[in-house]
Length: 270
Image (tube, rainbow, N blue to C red):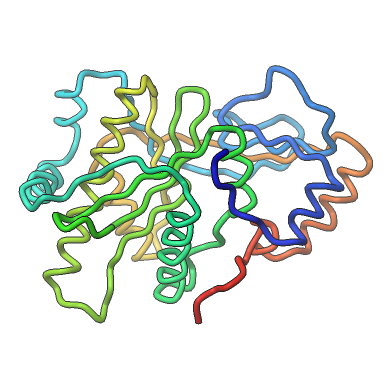
């Protein structure tokens, strides 16, 4: 049995009382006996419902590897080659309790550095693990130290990034932080190749900022664009299927992001 992290008590009680079906990238072929249907990253808006627009960058993995490589910006290709020469590697890992605790520690380190890092979807991750749709990968330096973490949801021939954390540390020297930055680029490339080998058709960079005001988000968007791909619009919608579902969604709308995501986790580092 795979390790499944435990979401908050409130989230678990909600899921027990309100049956929720979650689907990614496409409408379900059949509906389970559910109160709420959550639709994530649909290619077009669901009619007659409020839809949240979620633009992203999608990379076609079905092309030859040479074409995939040539679509990466020249500067990023140079950085990826340098990281490989430095002994950086990327790999898929099993989600054991030990690996989860390390992943969680990296997340809270990021949250201390970036208040807008967003809630970690512990409840969602647990459901994806149970369905065999969660993938966790890392990059390591030549000594085996983890430099970055990526997690994905895998469905309908598409891998969409859920979380990305790297060991950037303002208290450490430039050499370290530059190495981590190079490792993260190689990490993306290695993930793309592994998904391609697995027959996954599309690599989804997990959303992209399309505004003009937030400089940090603009920098992240440029980083994502450096891997090639194309901008696509996707849409999230939530459909109540029963009276209980409608009442539950009214309640959920008043909850904070952490509670909706199934967190925060217990034992959060200070």
